[in-house]
Structures are given as C-alpha cells and as structure tokens.
Length: 226
Image 1 (tube, rainbow, N blue to C red):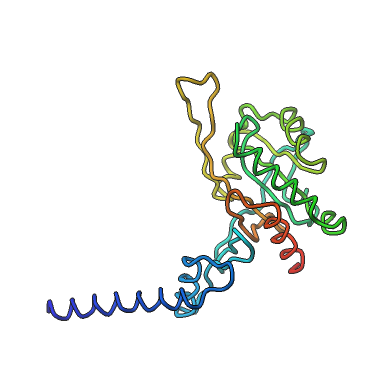
Image 2: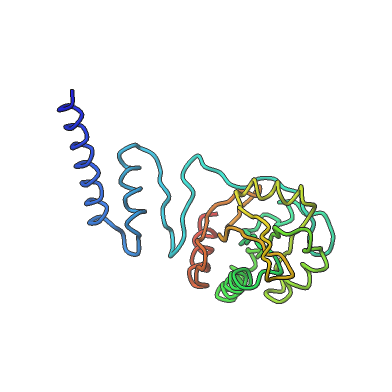
C-alpha cells in the first residue's frame, strides 16, 4: 500500500513538473509564469482560466461574475445606479478621498489613460470613483475630490449599508484602521481597477499600479469587443 501511495505521489510530482515545464516554454509574450501555468491546467480540464489581455490585466474566468445592479449617490447628491453610465464602459476604482498615497496615484493613472485615448474612444468611457469611506466622503467632498483628476469622473458614495453592499458585489476588501500616532483614521482596502460593462458587470480587472498605457490598451481592447 505504501509503495502505491509513493508511486502516486511521484506521478503527481512529475505531472506538475511537466505542466510547469510546458508553462515555461509555452509562455506568450509578456505572460507571467503563473498565468501560463493556469492556462495549461485550463487546457487539460476544458475550462477557461484568467487570461492576461494587457500588462497587468486579468480577464475573469468563465462563470465568475463581479458587480451587478447597485444604487448609490453621485457627487451632485443625486441617486445613481449602473444605468447612470449610459451603456458606456466604466473605468472604476474603489478608495477614499482622504487616502494619502495609493488612491490619488491610481486615479491619476486612470485620468492619464483617458488622455491617451482618442476623442471617439474617450467618449465611450466613464471614469468612476467609488468610496469605501461614506462617513467622510459626502457628495460635496466627492465632487471636490474627483474634480482634481478628470472633468468627467463620477464620484459615488452612499449610506454605509449601500457602500457595503456594493463592496460585496464587487468583492472589494476594506477596513477602518486607527493608528495612535494619527488624528484621522485610515482605510485599508484592495486596489484593483475595474472595467465595468453594461448592467454593472465587471469585464476586466487591472492589477494595482497599472501604467496609464496599460489601462488605455485594456480599455481599447474592451471597446473593440463591445
């Protein structure tokens, strides 16, 4: 019995080694080794794995959905749902206006990506900022904040319950953090950029700190696929 178990373990190790080897030699240009490995597994199982479509971009696996219908309030204090994007592709980020570093960097990258698009392309895209700090991010605060990045950027807030529900739909992690040396609290949160299509469904995720060129390339790819 022990010999059989050892043989099975050895076969498993050899099989995984062969898959890693195939992944290494079969990598596409710019593809990370881990993504290539998942693609090899997907080919064996007949399922679709996350596929990089641009630098830092990962397409959601088939059958996995993020997002959905939501209700929030925009920077003008008006109710806002997914229909407010008017069928356009939304380039969205979840953060908070009191964020000291990551949020303004990511929003700046989104704004820069918008400038890289042609007028026709940019006219089909809406940049959006979803807060995860409704306690401080009132509509007035959001209006002041998003105006620093792009004139068409939509700032979305709501009640704590509404914000929590949207975070659940998009699987956004966030948590209030109090530090003794600081007078104001911080918000720990995930930092993906979301490309959102019709009905509020996510079509593509971009990893944190994606360059404007990568964001623009991903947007063009999604616009071409619509």
